[in-house]
Length: 300
Image (cartoon, rainbow, N blue to C red):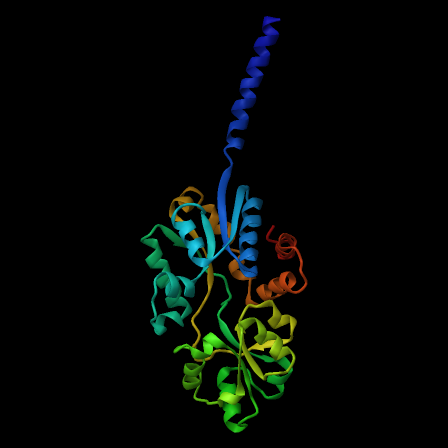
């Protein structure tokens, strides 16, 4: 009986010893902001990390400032931030030479945040910035691909093009009026319809306007058959998203860099538009949409 009890105790101790490393799971907290694209990016990071053996907690649904503070204070370990947001909102910088150049803006915020113990990993291959949109068939028939093409067409066909513009963007000193100056064209006030940003897409779809402003990765662009005009003079600030990780977390789990890196090649503007549309327009569950996309791209 004593030998049996001794054997049981030894076995129990071995089980505890063997299972101890498994109990010490790799844990990270992924944050995110409060709109569709951010929920998608956070869910992508979560599923990729879980597939790599991490235990992941999500803390999403907050504004930019709260997300940033949560990272700085250690309440979250990483989240996707946009270069333009960090440069203009967190650091309150306004140098157009930097804020309209993807590499310069990324390098600036990366270096500035490194001093605060925050590491910017490789950015994703899309830019969620302001855009001027047209219906695809109209842009094609008028041979308009860039904003310069649009400016030329307006000069040659005065009064034919009208715009749906967000009120704030119209009034801002770096907004629509400066855009017209940069691209050397002019339209009268009667050719500009001021409305909230959410209504510009519907106005363009219903042919109430010829061109409208929006955000370049919005799912409605692909779903409604719109095209983003190329900002060939780099007027709009760049908003390239990238994972920002607390330095101590990355030092503890350096594999995070490689786990998230495949998204830099796969997640293009076209792909994020499709995903945003799946969630916003087709009302697909975010977890399911992300899981299907990751599997389709052989990432999990």
